[in-house]
Image 1 (cartoon, rainbow, N blue to C red):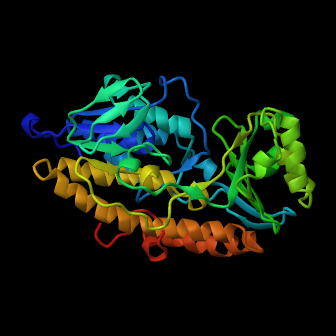
Image 2 (cartoon, rainbow, N blue to C red):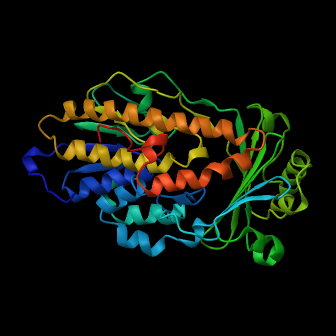
Image 3 (tube, rainbow, N blue to C red):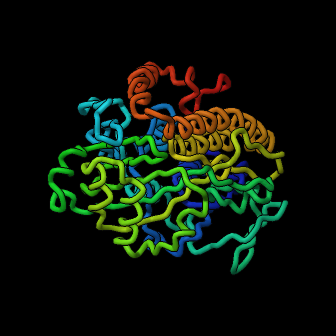
Length: 403
């Protein structure tokens, strides 16, 4: 991007939320010399441990945003092509697919590392930490727990699934997807269980049951293992069992019962858990959600279209939203509101396709023989992606004919 805007033409921007989408937008605005302020609820950069799995940034969305943000070289230093390794099995550990380390051009990066790259790319004094947003006025006035901020030409809600900015635009809230997730960690797996550690390789190990249960395991940059135990259960399932997540033995006992038909090799992913356990019930916004445009306000990322993780599009879509929004702001200072209307129009269409694919992937994940079916179509999906044809499947965020 790189073009600079004359001071008298520059709009004043507020970004609520310092996640990947908000920080990507901030970086792009910084390169264009457009003033912005990020308001983040975390007390400081160091207070929150960034959680979630490793990220696979896609070439036409997440990677494209990284390139335009001028961060490609530093991203390449930290991204792992080894982590692209993928194995797909059933609950008996019968292997349906093994990539054998072949690269798909989508290296993976740990979430905390990506966050640091993005945070380091914008001036520290542009981020206001410890700002908890209560609500937003129609004129873009931001009401925080300890004060009010005003005077912004545009307020951008990049504040995640439970966005306060979205509440000023829509009465629709995320709903429970029907899938509960417990995130399990195995620290120093090579010492805990060398056989298990070797089996899991350097990337992702996806195992599918016929009992509404799934285990997705990812190798982290430090060698540890993160396993997501996905289960189709009622929203109150964990609460009804009164399990204390700090009591790892109780969590293991519960999960080993839920996965009792699974083979010992895969149950070891539960048994060997020696780190933090995190409850992550999965919520989503309705496919095709949209809102009536309101001057001074807009959204990006999860605030606009939170999805479940089954298509791997959440962060990619958020970063591409940021790229599209940056283009709209930079090239349309005199007609900013009109540009935001057009940004939202494209966002609604683009996000609806990705949301639909994600919903279908959720359903497919819990179908009978899901692992075999995924393996059968995986090479086809990857081949389309390598040829830039993911639009034909609705995969990838920038698959609009308007883009």
